[in-house]
Amino acid sequence: MTRRKGERPIPKVVKPYGPDHPVAHWIADGDGWFDAWVGQMCTPYAVLTKKTGIANERLFELSFGEPPTLAEIDALAKVWLVPPEGLIASIADASACQPLFGPAKRGRMQ
Image (cartoon, rainbow, N blue to C red; front, top):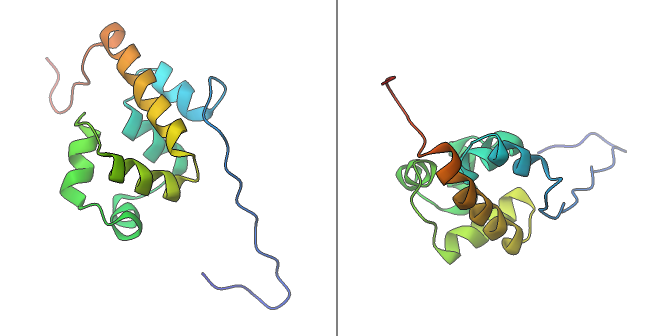
């Protein structure tokens, strides 16, 4: 990232996860926790792979519902500027919503 002379950096703030967090609204609408974070934070998989060290294939596994490791949670939390506890809470919220909406269907319609 380059800045022009005299330009001040934009401060990045950590917004704690809670019921009013935008990701919580995505999860309540039926999105998985990983897809909700990727969508809300507009983070391409290539950027996540580069900044977290998590392989692209593993990111797809997380998107399809595989449980993350604690190291993956920590790495993703740093990129998305959220405390790891908030990320864990969003995973729990998504798990609680899953029975209401059923597993995410990907690919062809049934």
